[in-house]
Image (cartoon, rainbow, N blue to C red):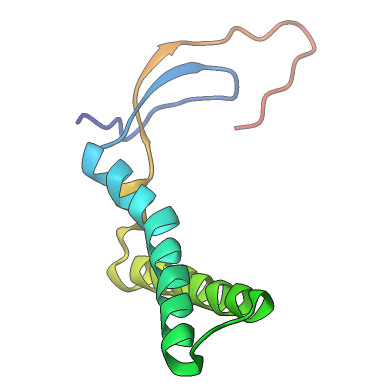
Length: 107
């Protein structure tokens, strides 16, 4: 997908974004799938260790697993430095905004 190295885009410009399909799937799996898997794994592990769980124990085990999954996904992003492949990039500037008198746009 084409990327514009020097876009000269300002606030209010209309742009077309692109994101690789693999990046979108990977972002969804890391954001939702890994913590969900962690919650299920925490619940199953606690059930295997303690036997029958009460509601509070099951909730704590699932939350602990979800947090472990969240931090595992975060570690995965930092380890491979793949966060850039998950970010959309500007493919082209569709139209520029012509500022009215008195409008201020940050660059």
